Each structure stands twice: as C-alpha cells, then as structure tokens.
Amino acid sequence: AAGMAGGSDHAHEELIDPFGRVIEDLRISITDRCNFRCTYCMPEEGMQWLPRSEVMTFEEIERLARIFVQRYGVRGIRLTGGEPTVRAHLPVLVEKLAAIDGPSGPVDLAMTTNGATMRLVAQTLRDAGLRRVNISLDTLDRAKFHRMTRRDELVRVLDGIEAAKDAGFDPVKVNAVIERGVNDDEIVALADYGRRTGVEVRFIEFMPLDADGHWMNDKVVGQDEIVEAIHAVYPLEQLPARGAAPADRFRYLDGTGTIGVIPTVTKPFCGDCDRVRLTAEGQFRTCLFATKEFDLMSAMRAGESDDELAARIEAAVATKWAGHRINQVNFVRPGKSMSQIGG
Ligand code: SAM
Ligand code: SF4
Image 1 (cartoon, rainbow, N blue to C red):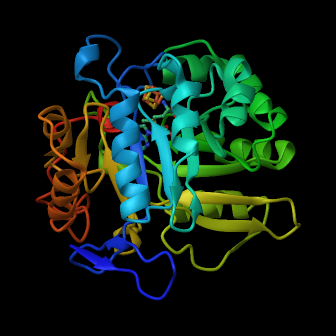
Image 2: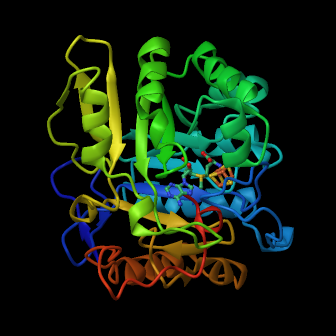
C-alpha cells in the first residue's frame, strides 16, 4: 500500500510492499524486439513479436513514468527490452523521461543495451538526458560471441562500449551472463578486459528465463565461484553492503577498479528488492519472476484517470511476494522469457 514520506517539503506518497520494502526503481521495457538472439534469452527463430498497436506509445510510457516518479518518488528508471535501441525515435522518449522531476530531483534515467548500435546513438542519447548505460558483453572471442548472440557483432559491441565512454557516460558498466560450459572459461579474461578499459564488469548468474528452456541449476556459475576465479589472479575484497542495488561489489586490492556480481540464483537479494517493472505491452510486474501481471495498458486505453491507475499500482504492489523460489522444488517459471519481460 502507499504511505506518506514524512518530514520534507516535498512530502509524497511511497509505494511500500507488505514486507516494508519501498519501491524506488522502475524498469520499463520499451520493445520486445531485438537485433540479437542470445541463446540464454531468445530462440533462434519463431519469436512472436507484439503487434505495434499493443506496445505502449511514448505518451503512455511517459504517463506511467510520471505517476511512479512524481506521485511515488521512484528515483530511477531503466529502459530495457528486448533491445531498447531498436525502438524508433528513442532519443525523443529519453528526452521526455529525463525531463520528469521527482520529489528529490530529476529522475535517474538509465538504459541496458546490447551495444551494437551505440557508436551511432550514444552521443544523441546522452544529449537527450540519458545518464547511465549498461552494455552486455559475455565473451571476447569472436566465434563464441557469434554462437552466443547468433550475430557476428563482437567488434561492433566493443566499439559501442568505447562510444559510450566517448559520449561521456561514466561509469560505463558491462554485463556478462556466465553459463557453465559456454563462457565460464572467460571469467578472468572478462575481468582483465574491465581492468584494461576502465569499465565495471558485472557478472550475472544465469537465470531460468531463457526462451528455449535449457536452463538447469548446474549451468549456473555462482558468485563464489566467479569471485574465487578472479581473486586467484587479481586479489579482491568485498565492498560494503549494496543497499537495494542488485550487484555485490568487489574492488581489486591493487586499485585497478571494481567488479560486480548479480547473484540472483545462489544469493538471492529479494529482501532488499526495491524494483518493479513494466513490460512493453504495459503490463505491470512486481518481480522479474512474477507469474502474475497487472494490466495497466487496458486501464489506460479504457480512459482511466491517474488516480485510478495509481490505485491499480498500489493494489499490485500489495501483492509483491517475499522472493522468488528458484532454488525450491515448487518454483514455477514465468510464462514469458527474458526479452518479453524486460531484463
Ligand atoms: N537487449 C539488452 C541487453 O541485452 O543488454 C537489454 C535487455 S536484456 C534482456 C537485459 C539483460 O538481461 C542483459 O544483460 C542480458 O544479458 C540479461 N539476460 C538475458 N537473459 C538472461 C538469463 N537467462 N539469465 C541472466 N541474464 C539474462
Ligand atoms: Fe536481445 Fe538482450 Fe535478449 Fe540478447 S539478452 S536476445 S540482446 S534482449
């Protein structure tokens, strides 16, 4: 339910779930389409795209974003997908969202991208008000990159990361999903890449959200294993508590930067989760692994007022569960895969 945040001149309501977690972060998927077909996310072919008329318009995205930021004090919005950069006129959307002021200042607008087109769009997005960018890169080997993404785009992605730095994004973070037997032999190479280029590499545990359903527990390379592999070559120490951020962070003892690990499977951080999500078709989700969605799109298109939409959002947040159950026998996979939810 919602409560008042007391004390300040900018008193606003907060979205607080039944476990006392305050919602401060909104992930918005702006398209279900993608120019890659990563094996841990999408099938090679046969993905059914949403008809364009069922995807939120920029006006609909902006309207919901305003409710979250201005009414409920959500601080951060991250654009994702699918691949957000394949959405036409993305800088126009970025400009609209970056202009939304919340109770404690402008919204912190970020994006997660596969990086393939960053050389073309990074500066425009930065100028439009995008503040932060995470780029996905799982391997430094061209043939393996081609196998993992089903696209021969390694060179472009590496250049895209440089383009993001050139455009002034700082820090640039690089996301690497590690899958056993696929790229677990490159953990140290990826760490090396981060040390060389000054980007923070964030290792992500493989989650059961792949479209073709090949996920198995023993394909997950856990945080401890990742950190030990790097520590053996470049000694690390853990940085203090992460708050609501999903990554556990570690610094190199020689001062050459930091890494992050997102241990969704082996060390779930649900207790600190401050996140909610909107899919590209305007469905509200209170967890990446939720099996239930709340249909804000139909409500908007039926002409509901902001108050009515807000009531739906509060009712949904009141159902946010304590945590996912990946490690339990009764875990049920969501009916959608990562690119359809918005990672
Ligand atoms: N297309 C963009 C990209 O790849 O960065 C944004 C969307 S993608 C779904 C968001 C993040 O989810 C990426 O870092 C991707 O590697 C990660 N991801 C996709 N499928 C995953 C899975 N099954 N387990 C863990 N992470 C996954
Ligand atoms: Fe596309 Fe990102 Fe999924 Fe890869 S992880 S298929 S780039 S949405």
